Image 1 (cartoon, rainbow, N blue to C red):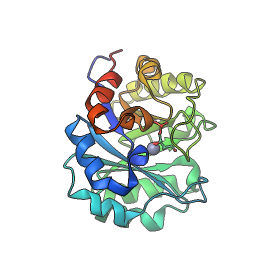
Image 2 (image 1 turned 180 degrees about the vertical axis):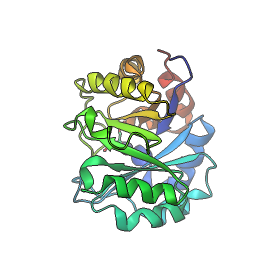
Image 3 (image 1 turned 135 degrees about the horizontal axis):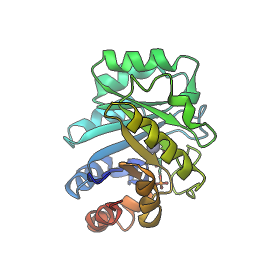
Image 4 (image 1 turned 60 degrees about the horizontal axis):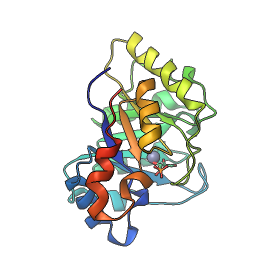
Length: 221
Ligand code: DX5
Ligand code: ZN
């Protein structure tokens, strides 16, 4: 696979007191997607932002808003994130019993649907919905916080999912999230990933560093 890898900086590592400015800066630095981590203090042990903040940020960038919902239940909130301006809505396979229904509701709103797998969830969790989804997100940390250590056992799972995507005739993005830096970026891209989420590695050093930070993550397989 030789197409270019997309970089999705996670604004979880941005300065929350200046979020609009941070989104403009990371957009100008070359971000492909703006990755927005939504946490509920229930599905994951942290609380972040809701649809009101996504809506407020929408006018600050025309880039794809890639909304990663780490919340349970998720169904009651899909409409609100779609209305707020999400382009991709990713939900967790572990967040509830009705993943298929949730994906249908995201698609019915005209949005791209993503399915995320925690480190303890096997690749086979995508098998019954692979015909419906636009993106698969492999978590390489346990979700909840930025700045955690990359879990290398997930590389095998990324390769397994790459095989499943290639075996399907569908265009499905393979995204990886958690502990991505210049070194781990190479490992996951070699395994078949083509969209890299990076919080710490994108926002370190402040706005003057963002363009270099993003360039360093654009590794080739
Ligand atoms: C973790 C979030 C990630 C996080 C990544 O639960 O889903 O998007 O911001 O942060 P880094 O890149 O610092 O591991
Ligand atoms: Zn995320």
